Image (cartoon, rainbow, N blue to C red; front, side, top):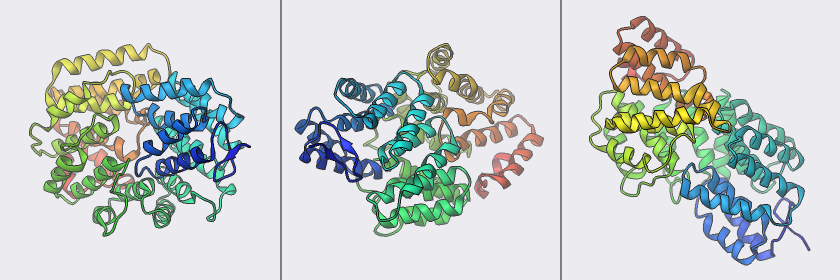
Length: 433
């Protein structure tokens, strides 16, 4: 008898016990909360031929942008591809294979097809949205989920996960009221859901609601914090809200604690958030001390040229730490990446390399050149992924570069633009004063 999941989807090679463990792991992954690996490894130990358990392990690791973690995903993929599987499972395996080949867009399209045939496959929806995020496809962040919504209702298992995914897609396409409502509904159903928590935080960032943001992230009895897989990113949002209120000491306390304190990792996206936070502080004239050096050294443990988004943040760290040789090496790696295979070549060419060159120029005091490069690339920066809130660090750098170059016309024009976009906090208006 073929075992099915909570949505009636068949799972090849699973025992009843393995399916239960897999369900626990998957639910935690959907919420980005708790330990997903222990129950997942238990499922694989029980049923080595359990295709979707290998698939989940691959999805949890191949997007990490860290070589040692990605290697785990590659091994899981290699095992899964040689097992008997059904059509839905084959779609997942094909998407993972495309991603490992550097074909982000192809992988996202495959998962779109899987979700069209199996709209209750939450894993296909979640990982598909992650791939949309990696390529900066804001429309698909929303539409991928909305295409499945007619097949969902509040009484289905994991409805909270769908609400959280929908909330983020709505926020990234400017539907802030609907996004906040969906995100709050998600967290009300499942308080540990970090994705819904984070979607509401994004709304508040985009609307400049810093005090509301602090209250939302630090409210009493909040459940997102313990064992949060998205913990660093949500603490980053909390720090941005404190920064918006001019509370620099609180920002540094968070950086030295849950963001990049003693327990800091070399996980790429944790370092991305850390670099962006230090850079914003530095733009405001805050002395961040030796924090740059440790972060830059950790960025240097991974090869460059594989992710334009990660490379851009590594450049922030290298410039912040004044590490000239690493700046040059990163630019060389990006030059090689442009000629390489996969979608990242285009992401680097269209956004990553000019952004990194601009950051390097800014660090050298060549502010006019930095402003020129950032002005030329600002309409393309979505191409290397990330959210509006994350990419805003480049617009803030452009404002600072224009001011430092003495181009007050450009600086004031950029400031005026903020009225229709992410509000510039009062404390940061000195960037364009």
